[in-house]
Image (tube, rainbow, N blue to C red; front, top):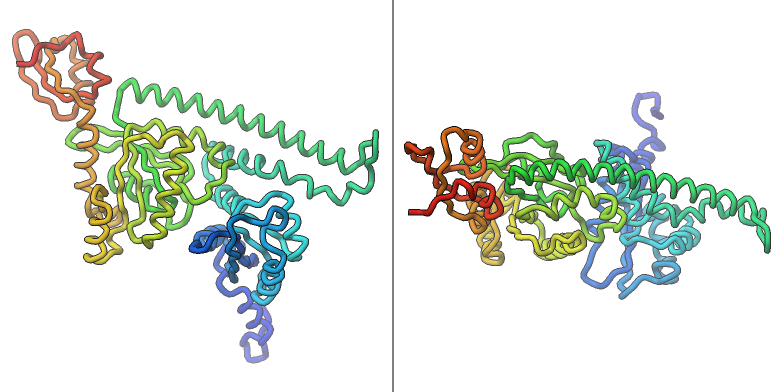
Length: 438
């Protein structure tokens, strides 16, 4: 560090500090991004800025061109590109971040025009996933998504070799190298898909065991950073890792919830986001399948978000649920983080969303009402049965207590007479014990 004779920083050192202001505490403090977008009027770049900050990149400024669709060659119009170049230089940015997924041609043309590296929204999200992946499965899924994304962008990496060869009937060094790299990438993609298929098969075995005991399943779905993991901990008393950052949870976590003695399985998986890259939906298919197969979805939303942001988030979640085939699943809307709201705002929120459950996973407020709502939803699928279980069949009796929660039992000379509410799909399992209801 440059210091003068009195031990204080020199002017040049202080200037260097100001240039890196706002990014020193982040893992990649030297990256300073200028954000761009081509979008309809009314949208903003706040989400891209949050993604960049999560990735450890300082946001230096932004510029939006309002247009119906991006330019096919350069994403932005020619005039706007010049404005971006001047603004990025003035902001001391060394990176351009785009709010959409760019085609390889758009990315190359933008870099040539702006003279700076260009990353798109998908690259930023993939970078976040790569840094947050902890389990072996998560790392496989992220690597697959990155390879799928980069495969179409390999041409630009070897363009400097293309002039060394070519022509009819020949194959130059540039073409040879890129074909080799593409073949290696495709081989690796195939290997990753096989390993993920093995993971999917293991999940199927675990799921078959859960279906055998027929415990009701609940999936927490929602926008990233809506507080799903905190809610899972609050409901089940678990200690799943929680952090206030986007996409902190990538791997599914399943815990047991008990309501009036009846067990439920609650699963928390990766959060959703606007314009979630298709590569991620494909790579995380095995994980997202837990959401699709759940008996009940809890759509968790951040109640403290602005109304227009909430609507956009809700549409994004509904879009992803439709993409994975879970759009018809029964669901409850859960508005989390109400501890951040005033009493007046809470009242207004309840009027706007009369069917929603207002909770604070942080303070525990509203969790009892949420538990009652969950029970009501599952009660619709329950059927009242009366069974006579012989004393010799103690295993079935214990299983009934586990599945039905609270049961009414009476000891008789013939066996234990039990009245219980069972899921309709389980009634046939105990049909041999069934007696006429009196």
